[in-house]
Image (tube, rainbow, N blue to C red; front, side, top):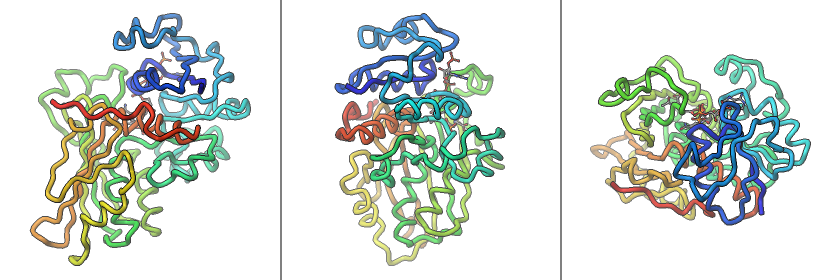
Length: 342
Ligand SMILES: NC(=O)C1=CN([C@@H]2O[C@H](COP(=O)(O)OP(=O)(O)OC[C@H]3O[C@@H](n4cnc5c(N)ncnc54)[C@H](OP(=O)(O)O)[C@@H]3O)[C@@H](O)[C@H]2O)C=CC1
Ligand SMILES: CC(=O)N[C@@H](CCC(=O)OP(=O)(O)O)C(=O)O
C-alpha cells in the first residue's frame, strides 16, 4: 500500500484529493493536515467522506509526514517549498498542487508570486506533471509540480498545433472561463454568491500568474518564443474550465486528424468528432480534458475548445494520475469516473 499524506486537507483541492484517494485500492491515507481544524474528524467537515475517511485532521507538525511514501501539498503558493527538502531527504515523494515548482525561470517566478524562492535547486529538479507531455520523466521523479487549472486546459488544447509546427506561434490567444471553486475555499468578497452568481466578468487581463506558466509550456512545445495572450473569466459555475483558443494555421492541415493522432492512447484526453462543442458538465467530477477543433468558414483561423473540471484534471485528479505514474500503477486507478450530466 502507498502511504499518503495531504497537507492542506480543508481546501477544495484537498477534499477532492480525499474523494479520489478514499477509494484508491493501493492507497492508505496516513495524515491529513489543517492548522485551524486539527483534531476534528475529517468526515465531520466533509460529510461526503463519512464511512470512507476515518482520520482526523492533524497539525502539519504532528502529522508524521516523513513516514509517508508520498505527500500532496494542497496549500497556498509558498508553503510546499518550505517543507519539500526535508521530505525528499526522508525519502518521501512530493506532489505540489500549488505553483512553487512550476516555473523554471526563478526571476519570472519571483516576479509573479512576489516572494523569494526557498529552494531554487529543487525547482530545477522538479518535473512538470502534465503526463501527456512528461510521462517518462514523471516515472523517475521525486518531486512533481502539478500544473495549474487554466494551464492544463490551455496547454493540452494548443499542444498538437505547436508540436507539429502548423500554427503561427507568434499569435496565440486563450479566452478561458473558470468556475468559482477555482478560487479556493477561503472566504473572499468576489466569490460570495451574490457577487459571482448571475454574473460574468473577465479579470487579470493586464496579467495573470498563469500566463508565464502557460507560455513556458507553449514555448517548449513550439521550440521557440511564442506570442501569447491570456484572458481569464469568472463564470457562475461551481466546477469547470472552458478555454476557447485561437491560432492561425495553413489551410492545408487536417486539424481533426492531427488532434486525433496526437491524443490517441491518452486515457484522459478525448478529441470529439469534428463540429462538436464540449460542455463543462461532461467532465464534471471526471479526470478528462475534452477537446474539439474547428476551422470556422474554412479559413486560416483554428478555434480549439478545451474543457476540464478545474478540481479534477485541473488539480486533484491530475495529481492522482501523477501518483499512479510515480508508483508504477495503471494511470486510471481511482480516476475512471465519467462526467455528471445534468
Ligand atoms: N481550486 C482550484 O481549482 C485549483 C487550485 N490549485 C492550487 O491548489 C492549492 C490549494 O488550492 P485550494 O484547495 O483551492 O485552496 P484553499 O484555499 O481552498 O485551501 C488551502 C488549504 O491549505 C491549508 N493551509 C493554508 N496555509 C497553510 C500553511 N501555511 N501551512 C499548511 N497548510 C496551510 C488550509 O488549511 P489550514 O489553514 O487550516 O491549515 C487549507 O486546507 C493552491 O495553491 C491553488 O492555487 C491548483 C489548481 C486548481
Ligand atoms: C477562478 C479563480 O480565481 N481561479 C484562480 C486560479 C486557480 C489556481 O488555483 O491557480 P494556481 O494553482 O496557480 O494558484 C485564479 O485566477 O487565481
